[in-house]
Image (cartoon, rainbow, N blue to C red):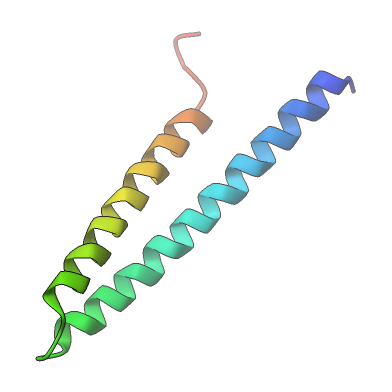
Length: 74
């Protein structure tokens, strides 16, 4: 195994680890948003910010997933 292979494997592992972290954060935010939305006295601004954060996480997840999927046309 060459140094290039090691670098590629390390980079792949780091990306997959990051993807796992983003998914966990996204799922946790989903739970928080659901619970807050059940509260009659919810801070709407806070709720909007959490939803916006969740959407940003989703975009990051999709981007990373797209990078990890091999290009079938190559």
